[in-house]
Length: 246
Length: 244
Image (cartoon, rainbow over the protein chains, first blue to last red):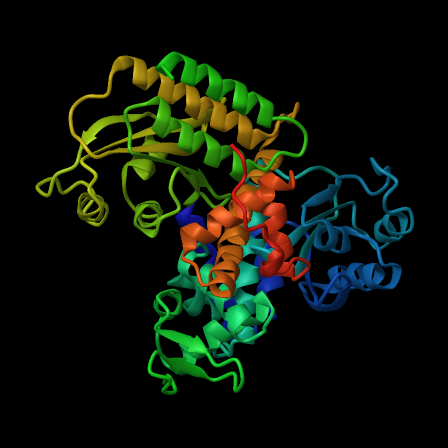
């Protein structure tokens, strides 16, 4: 498990990316990695889930349409609460939280559903939802894999928004740590400098790293050391001397 | 205060903290600080395993970049990784240039003035979930008492991470670990915001975050989230330091 599991996920991503670029295959990867019946990814812009991004099959798509229609379900819950959830038997649900969703989802063929928040620190990107056509909870390995997959999806969304080459996502994410202090500190600093949300600051950092052909963590370190900043007026990147950073 | 009184005070303080709605990062930061006070060590910190099995830093007795760097390197190599993988403690490991055991970690630790390290596993029913790392600026052996105290504090750290859940399945554990690690990222993002807005360095930014949280009886993560989501402005943070 561990680092090698992450390598397996990237290998799967690379394989499917050739068939379907722009990250649309991430759901297929999620379903395959967790060995569940299907997966969907929804993106949020604020509190509400705004749109579905991709689904791995027809049932997953119907489930997501249902959730968007009813405004309740695992993805919505995970996104709002920031906490993972599960309903291991839709035919006799443990709680009454999804009165409308549960029977309809069961009618579509799902028996158990699972929601995981997709986030990076305080930035919420949306949710990963998974379903299975048989009831039951997730195994230890499936649970670890789902968390891991949710983290990979968050990073993939960022990389795509920052202009990562379509079809090159796996390679892009592979060399980078999820957890680089400098990147997150720099995002906070850039947010203040450019009056951006932290999410947009993370994207701006990645985009400028792409544009100047450097590694995001190195650019982040320069930001933290105050060698480079975003001009508050023009929004351009400048070095300590005020020259445009390129 | 003598060592024993200090330890008792620490345990009381931690027990006091482990009530409803406590912030894991806050408790582990307190615990790391008390490690330095109660034992003969100069820096301490906690690393946790992500659901993917990577070790990541969550709390330390010092927020200075020189110490944080030593934790960041340990995502790949170092005493914490070895302790985590083997599940057993690494005690009294002297650091020297000649030792090729950790080619990236050792030279950085030496450059920061550290001469020996220890790492104790955070263990839960046969599973290792992370490690408590202790740094000393001197070589020589840690006393047997200190080793017992260190493992005791590592066990307290484990309890803090589990957040008094009565039934602890693997799924819940993954959730707790995942939340603790994500909290740390929120805090780093907030430190960046405070640092830029108040023209301070990262450890001053952390102190400010912590003071505000304590003064208002809020969790560190809660305050940090407010800053990241924009519901709290850096200018709204308290200026004054929290009473201890």
